Every structure is written in C-alpha cells, then in structure tokens.
Length: 453
Image (tube, rainbow, N blue to C red):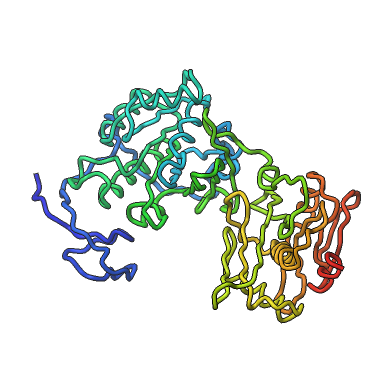
C-alpha cells in the first residue's frame, strides 16, 4: 500500500494545495483551506466492483451521433417534469438541495414510489423502517421501488449490479464515502470522489442518478463548488416551514430552461402538485382592502397572478424604513424615487413595507406597476377597483414600459375572472377575442388618473 499523506483543500472551490495557505489562489477566498488525509492508491473503475471490463472511448464524428432514440423518463410529476425540461434524461446527474426538513427526501421517495420504472432508493441517513413509515403515508405499496441503506460506494455498485435499476436515488451525497479516499464522509475529497464515481456509472450505463445535497448556513450546497459543475442539473427546493407551500427551482440545467418553477403543497400524505398556483397566491377577501394589488408575472413558461401588499405610514423614527419581502429592496427604492420625482408624491418621510404573499420571490420587472399601485393605494387609504390587475415595467422617467409575452399574462388574468388589466401602450397585443378590458397607458400619471380620480 502506498504511503498515506495529507493534502490541503479549499472548501469553496476544491483546489488542492501541498501546504496550508491563508487565501485560495483560485477563488480568492480567505481561511477556506482545510487539511485532509488522502490515500494515494491506484483507482479502478466503478466497473471493477461489478466485475466488468471498462470500455475504451473512441472519437466519433459528430454527424454520426444518433439522437433519435434519446428519450426522457416521465416521472409522473408534472411540476418536477416541467423544472427538468420535460423529464429525466438518461445518464444525467441531478442534484437536489434545500434546507433541512423542507421535504427533499419526501419528494424523491414519493417520486420513487410512483414511478413505473425499477428504482433504487439509497439512503445513508435513515433506516429501512423509517423509510417504510414515510412510504406508508405516501403510497403503501410499490413493486418497482427498492430501498438500500448503505454509505460505501463500492457496496452500492454491487447492489446495483444485482438489481439493475432504471433510476438511482442517493440520499444524500454527503453521507457517501469511497475506499479510495481515507478522509471521513462529507469531506471535500470524499464528496468529489463519490460524485465522480457516480458520474462514470451514470454516463457509461445511461442510468439517471438523483442526488440529495445538504446546504450550508448561507444557503449554498455543502462541499466544493466543483460539485455543482460536475452534475448536469442543480435544483433548489425552498420554502418557509411555517408555510405549507414549497417551490422547486432549477439553478443549472444542461437539458432545459433554468427559468421554470414547480410549486407543491405539503400535506400529511406527501407533497401535492399545485397545477394552478395563481389561486393559492391570491387571497380572498370579503371586502376591499387598501394597499393590495394583483400583478401578472411569468416564471419560465408559466403565467402567474400574485398578490402584492404594501403599507405606507408616517415614520416614527428619524430615518424612514424601506422593507421588502420577496421583492428587490433596491428596486423598491427606485420606484419610490420615481413616484416622488415624476408624480409629486412625498414619500421620503414615510415608512414603506412591501410583501409578496405566498412566500415566493419574484424578480420580474413586469410587477413594477403593481408595486406602484399598491403603494399609492396604501398611501391614500383607497382600495383599488375589484377585478383589476397590472403587467408593466416602470422606467426612471416615469414611463410605462412594455413587457414580454403580454398575451399569456392577459389570458391568465381573464381565465381567473379579472375584468381589467393595465399594460403599456407600446405592447403589441395579438389577442382578438377577449372579454377582459385592456387599459393601455404610457405614463405613470395616466395610471394614477385612471385609478384614483
């Protein structure tokens, strides 16, 4: 056996150093270098564990590569399929991250139980009895789901060779360890080595692998940053545990868009797909309330109607407060400056609080007009007309700017029963037959005149 030696790794980017240094020369971060024990041993392919012979790769002309037979696995979850870009690609590695207790394991176990494909669910954190208790709440019986509680990658590959699954789920990558590395599970070198072995397995056998990844206190996936570069897709499962809704986003996707959004509702029997999120994001009131506006936004290809709440009050302390939840605070300050400069509203000495209901975060500029309407409604303490929504961007000169895919926004508002929508005068609308009144405005003064005069 070769001599055991130590090496130094950057916790942020995974760069290796022969000795400790204060600053990583690759990512320029300070105090991220840690020492780990590395066993220098000749590595064999993952196929050696499965008594196979590795194939030698040879170059192929790009015109000779056949993509006609490339299919995606339908995982029978419309929200997950949408975020992935249409399904699970064979041979791909998907990394799912999220806060502890947010529902990552529940989501993947739920998918594994419902799939018509043979699925191996590998858990390094829970016992088989714990997994069975959770499975009974979701779906009592499944003939295609196999459960394995193991943390050593070599043993996992042995079981894979016996079962020959179509899809592999690993919960979680931080619990795995390889015999080729002597450091403890969860260390940088172990995470990198275990992921590399799984990538080789996925690409050579065309088997999709889904990994669960822990996150750090600042919200990033634990381990070296190179982990996110190695996988094909990085998903983020987020939401407030005080709310029952969960949001699935794609931070990286080699096979689809990163702008898609999946919404789930946490229930006692698992996660329920929310097919029409606009209905849950809009509150139902018996009487009209000031400071509330409905806006039409887009998340990927999906139009959503969300509710914006604003509260404007006199500043009790010397410096007025500007607080935004689910919205960019700097953009809120910009919109307030536009209102003061272009429309003459004196908001400099008032506290302004803004909230997007449902616990979601939106960065679509098309909600600017709705934010302005909610702020002015709260400032004047006058409720907006019932059945009105907004879809337009506000410029620094006070002009109402057009937004993309306005037809989809209008159709979504009409479908949910809204009677009037404010859009930019410069938007080109192709809709012919519609029952909703489309109010075209060019300046912020026109909107104020229509709403409050």
